[in-house]
Image 1 (tube, helix red, strand yellow):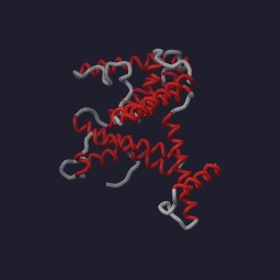
Image 2 (spheres, one colour):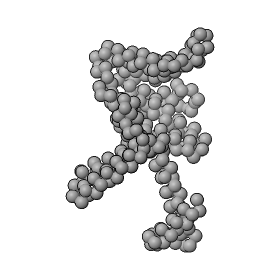
Image 3 (spheres, one colour):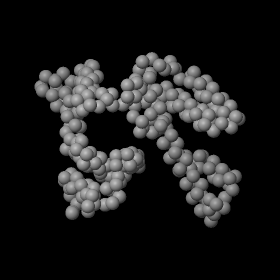
Image 4 (cartoon, helix red, strand yellow):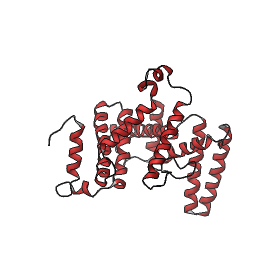
Length: 274
């Protein structure tokens, strides 16, 4: 087996890894559920390489993410559900269908993306998917029957909160402006304090979640994505802490040697240096 730029080689490698007789024991025992966390992790690592503007890492991480697609497709092929070619066919069909102003006939290309066309195309796709699921004897509503059930459970919690709020807002279930949400946040913090005073762990966790949900909602009204905002703050915290660590090292000291007051003083220096 040798490396190749041909996707067929990657598919061959995955088939070999999954071979029950001669494959890798770890790969053979995996299933969709056990691989899903790795798929999510690889997508995050792609985003990380992009954020760091590292093209070498981006190439490698995209390869790792592609491997995840091939892995899932191989497991589905073993079940007789679909194979990698079906995955490619589905996405190419979707892209062609959703861009008639690019791939359509001359009239369609000349008309451009007409108002309402995107919604009509999506509705057609949903109807076709529903019919296909019915034909296979499955529940036609793959994500559930409620209005908010189409929001995937696997989204990071902050992202899912934002998407739930955005969808509810489409039918008018929303604050009209940002300012009253601050009052809501204060109300939720008050309920969190009460739960803490009672020492009820489950209630504390629930009220803490309510605070986070309200903060996500406040950010949405400020046109801010909570996931992105927190990611930026994480980076800021990491950079400041690294400053503290480097400053201590320059003094011949370590983090273990420093007191909280020492670290706080250096932390303030890091803030001032930004």
